[in-house]
Length: 501
Image (tube, rainbow, N blue to C red):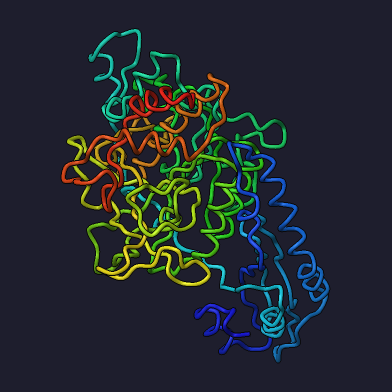
């Protein structure tokens, strides 16, 4: 029984009183994504099948927990405490979250249909963001106007560096592609984003959902998410083209709280048919994240055929606190869709294209996460690491501009009541990730134009095999550098030559 409980949970359970409640994530046997992996982009059917499989796996345990929810404990203080509360489910991870009293929790651990149980963790959101904690207003509007044709806002240096404008000239802008930005929310009134927001109809009037406070308004109150959205799809309406895919549509998914809220944001994105997920947040090694949950969630994204760019953290220059192979934060440490020929051993695949950060000189940022990553503990043991003996999983997968980049200022809404400047500085692997996501959106648009399926394995092959070498990079793909700095125009030509789009 106890081997199903995480070490942290065992400690809590050993010291719990009869009337205490412990918030946990209960993982069932069976991994729906492993059985319904998408082939050639048939992702929507896979999502339906995963939901049905998870519902079947969870039915008996849910019936048991609902039956116990009518019972109360009897503490000495005389205050009745429900034995089961806060029931919720996650089909992507095949898990159930709940607050349970110790007796119910022990009964759950003894069940044959339960694979593992862990505490539901909450980490301060500032520790999850992979960008500087402060941003500076950026006077880019005047520079943009002076740089060229006054009739058209000019792209920022980082958008130009990934070669996105060359695809715009071919009519490839991201039109028709929906990109979910899973972050601190989005200022959907910013002039560069207002016309690019997802239409959720009357059910989702503010272009997404807030999974932190469980309401329909994912407005950004920190700036991080707006900056990410601006790099994915900012149009330049306020003076500078910060968006790699200015024709793409942004779905705003605000997250915070326990890990399972992030997994449900992934599920929302899958259920509503997004093509791309951009997440510039990660759970670091010291917080003891639930690696099983994150791996299952990214496998579900892969099964749905969705392109997924994720940050890897900014702790590359802090090996003492974040040692290799745990320097790469999760879910950026999860396997990507395609296993590169340089990778040995070859294990399982998932969705996470982990993004490292490079500067204006194509040098790796000192803080960019350092690989390899490890998957060496049950139930995932396919990428073990032992220095010099077992190589782990090559990470990151690709790099993109991070430090010294510019994006939308969340305080600006064009009305004159917010910040006087529409743009602010940005950085970190948080900035690199939406650059990659924007490139993925452009290649997804190329597929839509050509009426060919969006296949993550193909897209990853294209961006990796055409990436520009980062200063110091020696091999086609290696730890720290990944495959190099992304060049989306070269990737487009690569895929076009193969008939992929």
